[in-house]
Length: 120
Image (cartoon, rainbow, N blue to C red; front, side, top):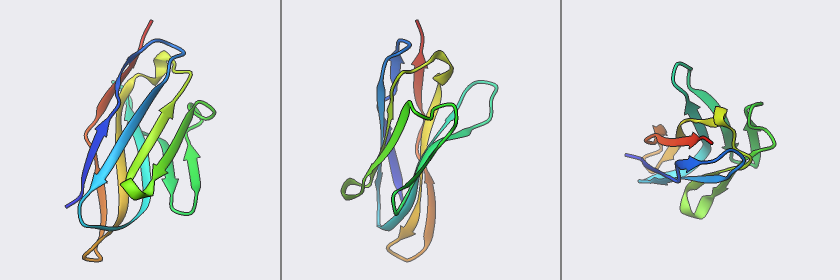
């Protein structure tokens, strides 16, 4: 089974920066996509950013230009660099990884949430 360990959340002031990490472990043959999601109280979970094998990335309009998703394939880790943070970025952030196991079975795995709070 695939396990995801998320770290990097915390409290920051508006305009500050934070970097989230999501490391995948297990009998993984390959990873096809890694993404970040967030959910604020009273709102649906939304896709923040996603990185697909081949270099393609996509961002939510609300974070475009401020957030950057990157991957370290050797470490099976995806990062989310968050700059110019705003109070509306406050949410529980989680990561999702899709790929293929050593058994050749496809998988989708979700990591635990990490709280990001942006407040003055």
